[in-house]
Image (cartoon, rainbow over all chains, first blue to last red; front, side, top):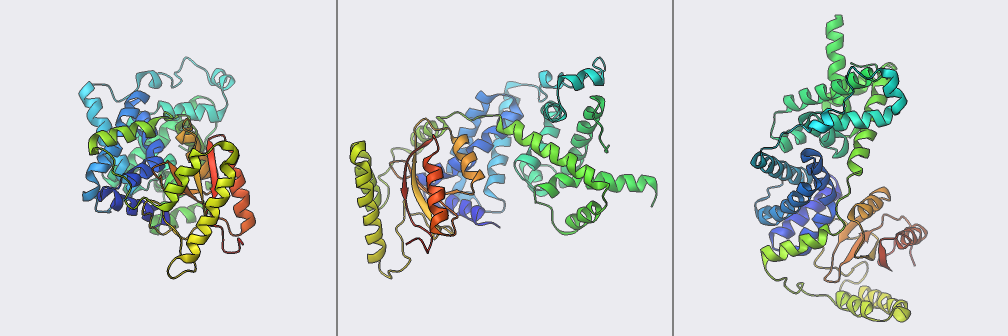
Length: 188
Length: 221
């Protein structure tokens, strides 16, 4: 456990006692990541703005019940995930961003054409963005949020084995997309 | 080991690579990946995962949270929790800072010098004296003995810019904000020269409004 995470927990203890400065400090530390996590899930920055604010108000409300069984960042992402899901279900929106999915190169584009359009790094970023939400989320949580397999399971409320399966298929899809675009890749 | 089994092992290692890169892998999984990476052929796979790591970070960092998010949140919090109380034990430092902010710019730094003197005197007259320091808004944590600076950010500063700057320079917000939105920024400097360098760096940022020296490293005399 790092000093920073201990400090997060100490701050949650202060929030539980009604310390508003502590909740603002936690907001400063974690808001950008929570905001980006929701924006990536929902595809809407407006929704991310509302939900991220709600997450920290929820932190204010739930701090007395925080038992410290997970890292504060994992807890916040779990709340964000739940709120994003609830809102999306309410709005009956599709999980997969059709526009982004359509951006995956199809058979009409030859590898040469795609290669001319962009370098490998740009292509990879585009393919990551175009992954189905359930795959992109595990990629985001591992690479950007630094979460472990177990923590991702907690955030998404899924078994560890499912986290690994989603990671496997996410990386496989990225490999397939790169290969289709003409980039050599050792795996899959 | 059959070809199928080899492929299965490779798939498993490829699945664990993102967690190896983010430092969260441990135990037998960590040992298995490290053993697998000893094979030069596996280094290509590590390179691919690193490219994914960079691509994912870039995609996320491209999303910029609104600059006024904190102020809007503070209003929402006040609406939920009622009017803010005056900070408990509103410290002499917060009061001094308030006075400092109220004076004209031309004499502000002279006031800062006085404030620094007050800080020095305060640390000397504390019961138990040596090493005892003041606290802001009751901050008590493991970073309490870290060298720090007092920083006020510009109202239009973007949180994402501040976070990125702090993160890339190993700086941490370890206290605050006070009622006047002053943050205590922990500076992991080993000596006074490092500390001064970091302080200048913070002051040079476009989002920094005011930067005042706090506790220096032990040799910081």
